Image 1 (cartoon, rainbow, N blue to C red):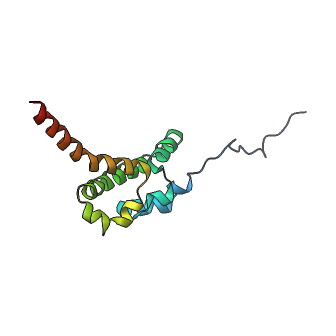
Image 2: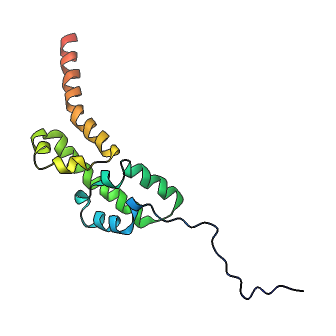
Length: 127
């Protein structure tokens, strides 16, 4: 006797949702003002998480938001790295909200000029 497939429904074997740090409410907040979002509260490793999720999903909108978020925030991070006084006052909350990638960028931007100065001084001593 033949089986009828009239009532069969194809269900996906597995469904995956974006993790909380990349849910639509966070993406909308990043679109509105990337500097206003505490990325550390979303995920300590926000950008690596985003990159990993983009390996699983193809969502050009999310990719564009992540790139623009990093670009916008990197400029502010660099400003704070070169102006320690500002980082201690109006930028303190922003800096607390940096994810690990951004913290590494801050350290590099902050230490870079000091390293160049030290190198330059050492070069003068040897010549």
